[in-house]
Amino acid sequence: MINTTELRLNNWCYLAWEPFRFTVEAYSYRNELLDPIPLTEEILLKARFMSHKEGVFIIWKRLSLNLIGTTFHYSRDKRVKIQYVHQLQNLYFVLTGAELQINL
Image (cartoon, rainbow, N blue to C red; front, side, top):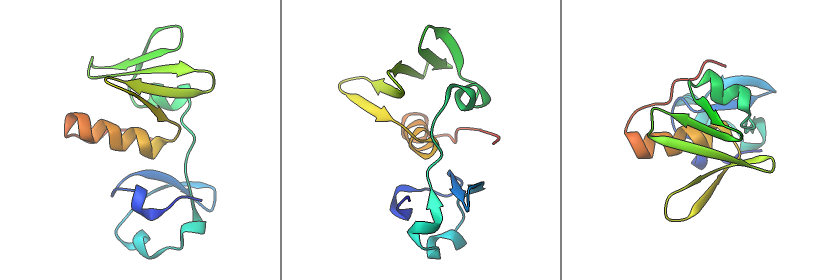
């Protein structure tokens, strides 16, 4: 389950276990209908991240994620855990002012 307050328009999540782009109409959906999409190496590659070295993924030198255990982390001043696609989309938007393009 995911809380709709975590989602921005066009964030990816699951609706009934199918990939779904969050829309204005979806704000009225019950939280239990929506689930986060786990972030994987495959999804990072679909989002045009490049595998830089073992467990490190970079996109246009703006954003680097490190795989620690089974979770991706972004760090500047402090480490931020990125477990789901919508979290990556939100972080990317905050850092760049642009939408992260992913085709799921």
